[in-house]
Amino acid sequence: MKTLLSNELLENIGRQSGPHRELVTRRDIKKYAVAVGNLQSKYVEGDQAPPLFHVALFWDVVGLDALSTDGLSKDPLLPKFPLTRAMAGGSRMDYVRDIYPGDWLTATRTLTNIYEKKGRSGPLIFYEVDMEIINDAGELVIKEKKTSILR
Amino acid sequence: MTFSQRSEPFSVLLGDKLPQREFKPDNVQLFLYNAILWNAHRIHFDETYTTEVEGYPGLVIAGPMIGDWLHQCVEDWLGEKGRLVSMEYSNRIAAYIGETLHCGGNVIALDSDSQEAQVEVFIKNEAGEIVAPGEATVLFVNKG
Image (cartoon, rainbow over all chains, first blue to last red; front, top):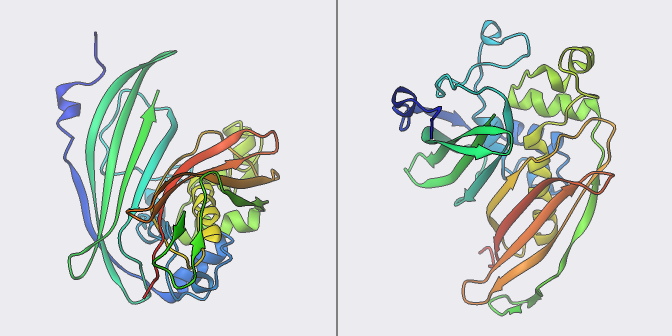
């Protein structure tokens, strides 16, 4: 089978971004919990971070000039793929330790896999990005695996 | 199955339903969500651009916010009886501002040795389509 994945592209597997260290604040937890409509007081009061708070904590804060017309910025971890239309992918999160205001967390993202599958209407490229979040004691807090699909 | 480690026994049965909850986000909520992320993707706040340039029927509800509602669906049911250990989900169909979505789910597996339950969750739209399916593992333990 003819493949879309050149060796040069596959050499990007293993590429990392980070480590990226951020402080968890009560105010950011409150903002996040309010914005998603969370009903639990421990989150709305900012006593503990709800699951998925790490999405906000580690979203890249890029400069205005790094945003394209659609408001997106390029993910520096990703190579240029021969397919560009994104399809629904999936995420898996393992929540190992709870997160509280005052915690310093460090995230490292790794491009762990690129593979091709035959879709109904042509080839599909799958890629996986793992994010590992640890605390200052080096303990695992959250492990996330995100699978994205391009067609 | 009753989780006996608890001072107040908490009973969970296979097939137990999670309480359903409605979500009707407006553009203020969508704006605040993307602001806390620092997500400037125009399809979440610029209606003219979204419909005329990108061709969507309306402002697109952010995928990870829908993912968050799956988490809330599990945690609102679980309360302080345990903790969410893992969640796997995908955003299958786009949803737009103006739509009313709802969550629900049920218990699909129980393990009395590990005190864990497997829970299937979903976000559905008004047409009854599953917008985002998910599967969670919860651990029933007393939190100190």
